[in-house]
Length: 163
Image (cartoon, rainbow, N blue to C red; front, side):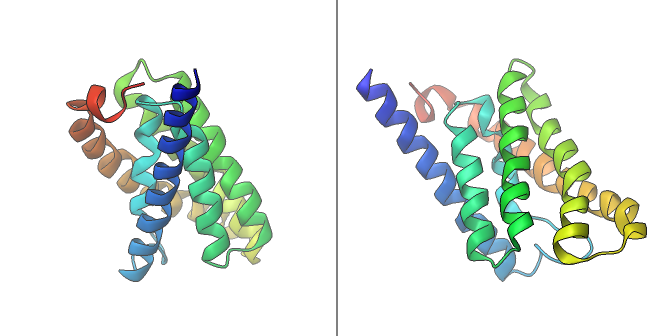
């Protein structure tokens, strides 16, 4: 039992660390800000397919990334909670292999524009536009890059994510 807990904590920590590193990489390349934001770290949102440790790992990775990148308090709290909820739902629907990328796309498309509105003072009339652009970025990050990652990892899932 202790060994399983150690494995789970270790996997969650590695996922959180990868999330932070990939967030900073996308920022350094200048593609994580702008109209359509592509964040490599969002590709990791497919990991609940393989391990429940991805749920706290993604949440902590998002939380740490938001803290270190200077996000506002609303973004730190509610952006991270959006990631947590999406990861939990992805885990619950994991028997539908490629569907795991859908909850993060939907959650971020629906909630992040409101976080941008109230956290960063965007105008109310920009919400539909932000839903479109955030959604497009999520489709690229989670839908395309995430599914590529899923396909690559799936072949080796029993080695990488053995419990």
